[in-house]
Image 1 (cartoon, one colour):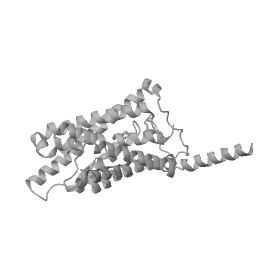
Image 2 (cartoon, helix red, strand yellow):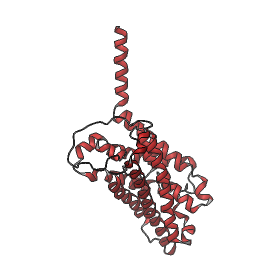
Image 3 (spheres, rainbow, N blue to C red):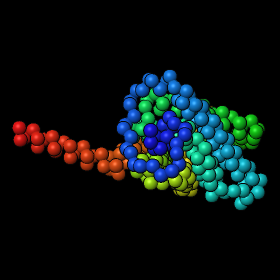
Image 4 (tube, one colour):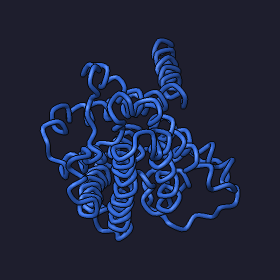
Length: 291
C-alpha cells in the first residue's frame, strides 16, 4: 500500500519515511464490505471522531473567545486573522497526528472528495462522515459547557450568511473555498508527490493547514467559513437557533459540490485520465476499423 493510500484511507499505520518509488495505486472498490472485518477501519473511524472533536473544541473556543473580548472592549482579541490561524493550525496538527491512521480528513467534504476520486470505498466514506459529525457535535458541546451562557449570546460559532450577502454568493463562496481545500488535499497526497517528498513528512499536512487558513481569510466575512459540513453541523446543533438553521443547507451543498469539482478536476485534468481514456478510445476505434 502506498503512502498516498495512508493519507486517503489510513489502512496502514506504519509507513517508512524514506524516499519511496512512485507507484500509482488502483482505484478503491466502490463497496468493500471486507473492510468491516478489519480493526484498522474502526481505529480509523475512532481517530476521525476524536480529531473532529478536538478541531471543533479549539476552533469554536477561539471564535467565542474572540467575540467575548471584542464585546467587552472593541478592537481587542485575536481578530479574523487569529481565528483563521486557529482553524488552519489545528488542521495542520491534526492531519499530522492522524494521517497515518485515518488519513486525517476531519471533514466530510474531504472524505466525499476522496470518494469521488476513487480513493475510498463507500463503506469507509459513510463511517468517516458519521464519526466526523458526531465528533463535531461533541466538540461543540464541550465549548458550550465551558462557555456557559455566553455561548448563546455570542452566536455559538455557528455559520450563517452575513447580512447583505445573498444566498447565491454564500453558496458560491462555500463551493470555491472547499474546491481550494480539496484540491490542495489531493495534490498534497498525490502518489508522485509523496514518493518524491516522503522524506519530509510535514509536506502533506502543511499545505492543507495553509489552505484552511487562506480560505478562512477570504470567506469569514461572507459565511463565517464552513467548507466543513461537520463543523457547521456541530455548531448549529449546539446553538440551535433559527439563524443557524436558516441557510444551513448551504454548508452541505456548497462543500460537497466544491469537493466533487476538485476531485474530478484533479483526476481527469491534472492526472490526465480524460486524455488517457480518449487515447484508449481512439486506439480501440482504429483497431476496429482495421478489422
